[in-house]
Image (cartoon, rainbow, N blue to C red; front, top):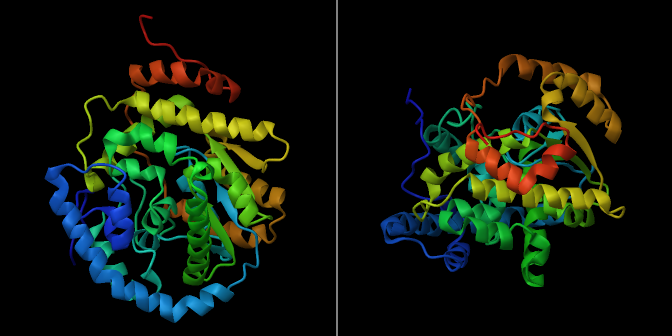
Length: 375
């Protein structure tokens, strides 16, 4: 047996699962640094090699995809990164009727359905068995955040900041709000998203698509237009913990796919600002009576009573047969203790910038404002 790797350092970047055309569009947005040119070339070569597989899948499945009809409204988890979205997503995806985007689909969204018989085992060997930042189990057939797939299906994604760290704020300001993109780009995003959902359901044989994507917070209205009966879950957590945790998460991911060196001035300030932008937008949505309404969960309460929270979600959305799914939820929890590797303390810089950008958000959700010692 081969031992699975333990880090996120690869000779290619995540764009390898995209198309040559999409890679070119993404690279036009920012300047990659010369030290990463080989990674770009290798990624481009992989994308070219996979182009015939992409074409074959499209030819074989186009009619089936076009004729597919959803039988249940999708369920969207839209909490900000590191707010408990992964645990909630993994649990909801244990329901036998749930369908979801897998890790393999997020990497190779164009050809995974027809090629997963060999791509799955290969990449299961290549990726770590656990996420290095929180010890959550990883696998190519596990539920995954679909934003990574969308970044390979079209060129606009806030997660392009993982490729171009020096442009972190730029992507937050320009790519996070999909509704502000050019009309053609919005239409392309909608088309790719709907197809991604269909392929997810075909792959997992589910009836109810369960999404986890923090970057869908500003897309709730778009998603409601695509899926009028869509249901939304918003999970939140102590803002200081969220910003500190997401900062460490970002640094861990940078090493695997970056095409620029992380600038010296990248700090928790960037993360706190992003958090405030996202959360203020969500709060603005709540004030608009015409906006989609989300079922809200406090993570700290969720972890104390996971099964009870799931029962409340099913009741709120009228999802039937909770008791038939409860035993698989309990079995999953028994197998996955979720011992997180978040032993680090909240940095003074995190406190400083959360207070600067998001003190009102801290108070709105009922958390105590923290202060830096000596100030």
